[in-house]
Structures are given as structure tokens and as C-alpha cells.
Length: 263
Image (cartoon, rainbow, N blue to C red; front, side, top):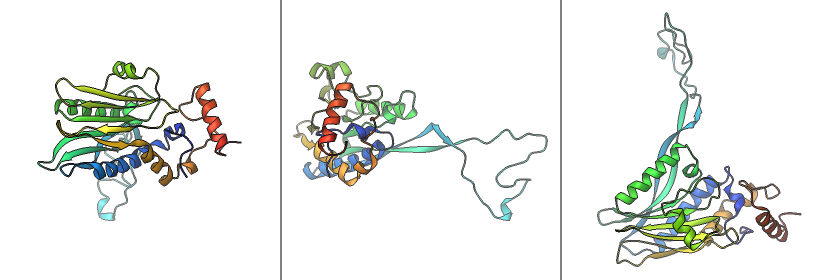
């Protein structure tokens, strides 16, 4: 069953739901691109990995045979004469985040990067945000096209296209797509997206002189909603996070009641 909303569903921004949506959308974007791109190009899914120091946990318990118990150790705790145990270092699990690269098979040259902005990309002070901003700089220095799809209202603005340039074409928006076309000087393009609007079909740049390809985002989001069974996960009876404005809440409530999702 499709999403009740014409565009982005704000309840999908929930921290428990959006990471799964992020992964699905990346996969469906890669499929859609490979269906329409010229033979000389291919979209591949890559992963960016970093360690999140804020998500540290106690080390997993390891069980060994008798031959591993020595030097006074037992159960992983080491006793050293003359020293007091002051605790164990917490383990930080690596975080893995998917994104897309469009390559030219001739030399496997990176042409365009397609990023769906994640929660960690917009979390102030988080290592994931710093890692993402470093990657933006790498794309610019390497003259790689960058497409960024931001379906999150929370957090600071992180897209490579300057915010003031985006506001020139849409002073009020909730989501947006921004594109930096590699070249000198850089060419900026953007699509501001109000909550009530359908997600747009966007042009994806390839090499200079090669016609851009177009991908329609809304059918991909609708497919995510269906295959992810998000209607079973979200709680439309509760306020979404981040909350809507009173006007947006009234608009969303009318849609949900018309669809039978609210009394």
C-alpha cells in the first residue's frame, strides 16, 4: 500500500525508521540509474565507514579453552602484581553508510557521487558529519559531480550547494536536492521541496558533453514505503519527530484521516 502523502512522509524521518529507508533508497536509486544510463556508465553502491565514539559499548565476552588462561587471567580479566585494575576500554562499533558512485568503466573513473543525506551527516559534533564533509571536499578537488538528496528536516544544513543559493529559488522548503556540476567555476543546481509537494524527477550529470539522465524520486520512495512495510512501523497517532508546524500538522492530519489512518 503506498504512502498516504504525496511526497515525503515526515513520519519516516524517525531515528528508528530512516536508516532503513536510507539503505533501501540507495539500492533503488542504483537500479533506476543503471536502467537509463548510457552503456559507458555504471552506478555502484559504496560504503563509508567510521567509528562512532558516542555509541561505545562494553566489549563482547570471549570464552577460551584452558590453554588461554595464564598469567593470572580469568574470564578476560588480567591480574598484575602491584597494580590495581581500573577498568576496560569501551569498544566503539564501526558505522557503515551506503552511497552511490557513477563510474565510467573505461579506467573505472569516478564521474558522479550520489548521496542520500543521513542522520549522522547532520548530527553536529558527530564524526560521521566530519567524515561526510571531508568527502565533499574530496569530490570538489577531484572534479566529481555531486548530487545530494536531503529528506531530513532535522539538523544543520550540510549540502555542498550554499544555502543562500538554494533560497534564491525556494525561500521556504522542508527537503531539497542539490547538485554541484564539476567544472571551473562550479555550477550549482537545486530543487527546494515543500512538505506538501511530490518529490521531483531530477537530472543526474555525467561527463561534460554527455546528456544527463533523469531519475524520478517519488516512485522510488513509494517503492521503499511498500517493500519496507513502513505503515507497520510508523505511529501516525503520535507526533512525528521532528514535529510539524501547526499548519503542517493540520494538513497531515487531514490526509491521514481521509486515508483511515487516524480516527
